[in-house]
Amino acid sequence: MKGTSKKAPTRKQNERRRPKPTTAQVLRQIGIIVLVTAIWAGLLAGYLYLLGRSHEPAVASPTATEVAVVPATASPALTDTALSTEEPATSEPPTIASDTPAPEPTATASDTPAPEPTATEPPLAPTHTTEPPAGGISFSAEVLPVLTTRCERCHGEQRAEAGLKLTSYADLMAGSAKGPVVVPGSATTSTLVELIVSGEMPRRSPRLPESEIQTISTWVDEGALDN
Image 1 (cartoon, rainbow, N blue to C red):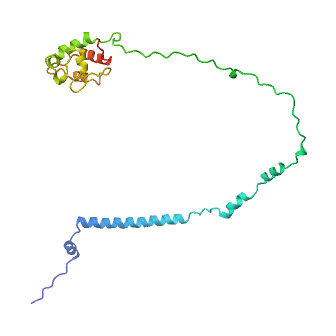
Image 2 (image 1 turned 180 degrees about the horizontal axis):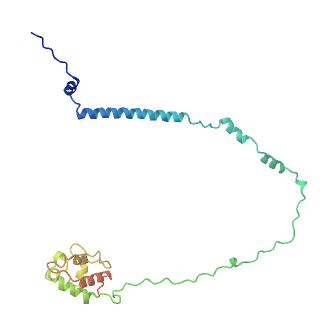
């Protein structure tokens, strides 16, 4: 019998049998290459930095001997000045005081005393008045009729929701169980005006006309006076 001989695998067959690297292995190899590159780059940058520092010229600081010698040397200008001041007192004749009196300074306009200000009485502070300004909104004639007509069902004599009654000026300013509903002089911060503008009041009724809302808002801005 003839011996059977096996053929050696070719290069292509070896490449087919070799397992392909996984994605994790490829990423690991890339990470190793990046890390090694970063290390070498850091070492190279450090070497260049040290090399540049070594080539910088050193600034020579003054020695202690030079610093001590500088104030010890005398300036020639100072020496000449000191010698010139040591002249004998008899080198110049003494000056004789003149008997002529010096002229007195004349008075100028600036020496004239300023007139004292006359005392004026401070203006009197305006007194508080309950009368509305000219053309103002009247509570009894314009505001109260709107409140009694539109809000009597929930805030009248028979029924007062949340403890709020709108049948008189005193009841309105007393507010509800939660506190005041009118801030005199500020309609934007008054709870009553906010509820009327938003349409929450009167409940279960149509929203107030713009003219009536404007009347109540203007009255509050004018000080919410009992007029």
